[in-house]
Length: 192
Image (cartoon, rainbow, N blue to C red; front, side, top):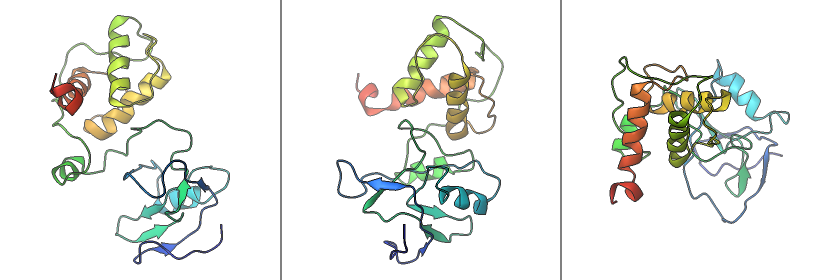
């Protein structure tokens, strides 16, 4: 993509080739935040502008507040590539503060303590129940009853957002209790 004028006047432009036509909407209808997990901001920005990555975003915000626009708002950025709604940003986002200002959903994480937990290699109905809860909340987890690599990844992503004190992909009491309370606080579940 060639140069374009930024939609946000405070942004510089670094065009990404990774974008397409909008589908079903004329303009932005949600705020979607991503966590790159990369070691440097410059490395993340470079990856989002690389055609090999097939990912992009409309805006990139540096830790010092500088803003880069990579895709015009009239186009569809490829964000996380092929993904599922509710793939989370990382543990460094101040989710509790954002939620207090009307952005995102949050409950205080349950304390980390002993108790029953599930991890890769476990099988059975309790794992299926965990996968069901993750799926209800929006994680793209197949409900198989097997605690596989994808389930472990979804649990780690959940922990990065909702229980950042320990991100290990193991569904301990704190993780499961926090997930249960989040689901219970959703409007469609809390009215029941």
